[in-house]
Image (tube, rainbow, N blue to C red; front, side):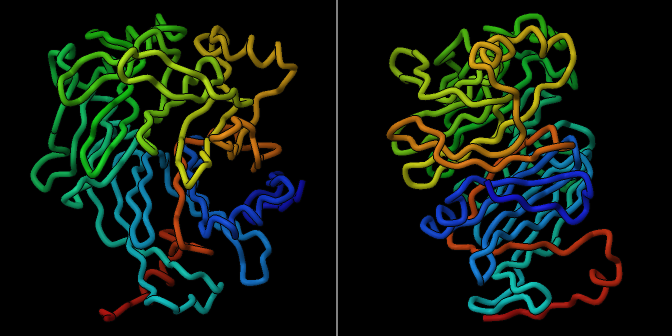
Length: 354
């Protein structure tokens, strides 16, 4: 394991498995992930000399995350922010050598609606999972949000987190599936059945595609298959869309949340479970005890052909939770301007480039 102390956390150490840097190089990508618990957005990539690059920014309660090579959408406690890359192609940021520099451009005040995931649809519109109001929504200039869809078993658009809608799978710019922790229409009743109440729902027809899941997260369509994290049992796997059967590919050492794909690999965020009664009763605890494993916080890179965890990135001490994970293709080293540095923000003025 290669270890790297984090600049802004004297007591935190980040470790990566041998070959992690080579994997980034071979796949021509970098990674980004958010932590709601620590209010951090992290970028992980490679410097010009091949050494690991880790860059972090503080954004209060950041959770929902969408990134491509030239823009970021990110949710915080009561806002959604849009960042754009301001570097022309082939130009590096003189301060640190980054080949992408994301600068804040647009912000929406949504209120505390608990945004879990964000994607861009085929028209370039940001669509987000509004967990507090149990719906899919988009930013709006005249309201806190514009609702787009909700499960038909949820009767009212109210801030009661009725089914804990938490994830969506998009295909060709259209949301096809969502996950919820339960099929229910009462405030927070889902908490009574975390072990097996989770569902996968088809957005097209509102049908329950798969049930009896344990706190499912992060549904994704990749190479024609529907993948998700069956978080309560530490499992990562796929759902047969004809039968609804969940087939586990592997188990990961922690509370799985956040999933992205590149080629034949999946990148999975894992967290240390919170120490409340609801989490202590999950199968996750028994699974890890049986495997004689301690829950971890970090990223697991899984080989889709074998189910083997090929590479790891771990936080060793104070970090406990990962909220979302993104892969940034064809980007070596990404960075972001700091909101807290007023001098840098005030003096950083860019002009249009071809």
